[in-house]
Image (cartoon, rainbow, N blue to C red; front, side, top):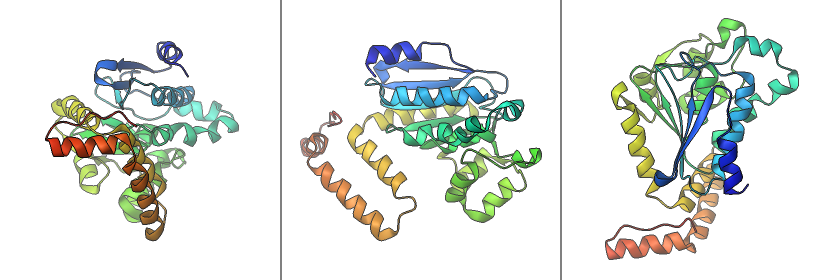
Length: 267
């Protein structure tokens, strides 16, 4: 998709969210804006997937931030929508929610207040979760006679293990941002007033690195999640070898020896 077509697409009205691109800071924000609870509709999930794919192809974007207006990130999905959706549509939910995982670029979730259901699942699909002290994470589907359907329990189990996942899923328990940080769900937990500045700092930090090395690291880590240790080490070696011939690695080494900031091109 060409840049002009991407920009035109990102300027179209979306269901329950909008997009802001700051080319000067190489940053794009996907902002949930159905206040006060930012409920995520069924159709919105497909649009979110399309936007993540467009931003992944955007040449002026290095980092993507998923955030929300108001006091709550999202209370979850539109309950009525589940009963109205076709089986075919429902079967695509997990694929749509996994869009941040498939992005080659780093994706940050900025969480505050309620981060429930699909709001939590979307956040779990991101690379970094910055939580404010007001954050409450939950997968409350048991209250509806259901289970998480978009990767929530599966991703959570990889992060916190079986016992804690059962505690959250089978008992529909909420945990705080601080507890999520202690359990390894959140990358950081900060005062609510510091959420935006913390996310800003992380965006700028990630922009300092080689886009090529960032893409390689993300894909390697994701692909090796279920691999045996010997296979993971072998794949890491292959990726390391490929990066050794890149312009960015040469630039990084020369900049280190010259004691100057590296200027990476993603090549």
